Length: 217
Length: 307
Picture 1 (cartoon, chains in turn red, brown):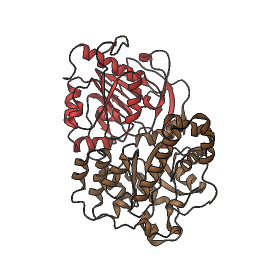
Picture 2: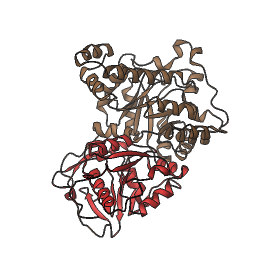
Picture 3: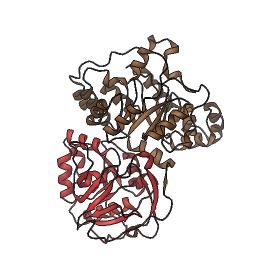
């Protein structure tokens, strides 16, 4: 899904229906970001909530908690199946961790949904006092820099050959990636008012709907 | 590292730690979660395994502070270190109200959030800590909107309603979250020229009062604390509009801490689903014994500390 089309998302038909995984985390910030872009949002806590979605957001939060709850309530497997089937998914921070195929510094028994061929290190920048804001240049999103908020953030320590690296920090650390319909950032556009990543997700969702490959609705 | 190197970028300007967005942001990430009081590294591990979004490291849980009396202070740095090194989730710790040096020490130890807490003995009966001076974010207690707004003005990046800690009686927590949310609704219903008087009555800055009136919510995350002891308590607080819950004595003063902790986590996520709350409430064993707040003589009510 490189070379996304013009942002004419949902120009026809009903608004795009975007799920936000709502087991724990900054769900509301993502809902607001998506709503300002004209999407309808759905909170996803159970397998049935995945029905008829055009795309899904995995919010920031505590990845180990979201992982546990997703397994306790039978959401993990259907969610993995949806990812494999090509559902566009955008993960921020904990969401990036959950999309990673491999984790460093996971807590004992911690699992991910997977899908992105990356290895992610949790809390890669240290504790909260090392949390920071930075302006990132991100050519894929245009000339205007991205105000990026890193909160006990992860980093991508290894990206596979099919993974497109969208952004790095000055020291070379990878903080935004894309592979097929999966998009992930170590930072939180949803708390800094940045909307272009959500727009990318909606573009993928619109393309998928137009292709007629979206889930039954 | 990556073998494609398709697009790369470098930061330009504006790298900074300890900004308002970063401080409030961590609280945003804890929403819908449960923060648990722990007094040892083992308890911290149990809390993490049960699904806590963060742990609060302290020397004695409020129920013991209440039972043992005396002056209650910041915890031993060794104990905080051992908890920090035992878990990968955020670690909070308590400083006494107004005790900015305890807060400096906690920041030095690397805690992720400082709780300027009425559960400890106040160190200053007039001033709270100037929280803007710190890189570490602060959470503060409040019993009403004015108190919450004064704490936010001083730099608090997260508010928790106070409840009555160490009792297992949720009635005060209910009162405080209801009060704060009712006061916010009242503000939102006021005309702009009425907000000047509202600011005076709330003893809070006009600009902040106006912001709350316009948005219909606090500019920071609002958790509930003080007396939450069961999954149903936690779910009730969420239904009353809390962003998450603190559970203090309720977990490790109960018969089966690991199970109760996990049950409270699940009930907090599925707060509006009685079938889940019923399911997780089964067979948890003894809840903490508890004290009725009505039986507490006024001088022993912690919620009245802070101003």
